[in-house]
Length: 100
View 1: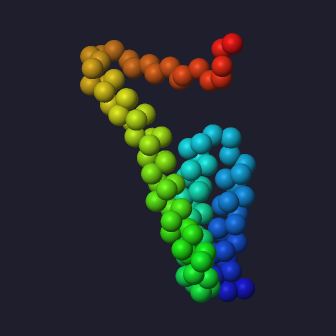
View 2 (view 1 turned 30 degrees about the vertical axis):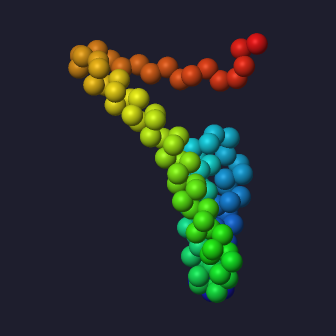
């Protein structure tokens, strides 16, 4: 088994693991990992369509992950700066699902 095969199997396992995720952030993180691994596999195995596809998908997944994480972190930063330092900060997660 070559190094390229090992990278390809690791990429396939990352995709399989992403299908098992029930929340979006871990799914996007695994998608980024699989894009990097499949891109590396495409270069190592001279499979340039695979490399091309995952080099396009990587920035898309990074952008979508950033749009999820940045507003949450900015909200927490603003809340910390607006609260006095001796008051604990409590962030209540949003309710999920339709209330009706």
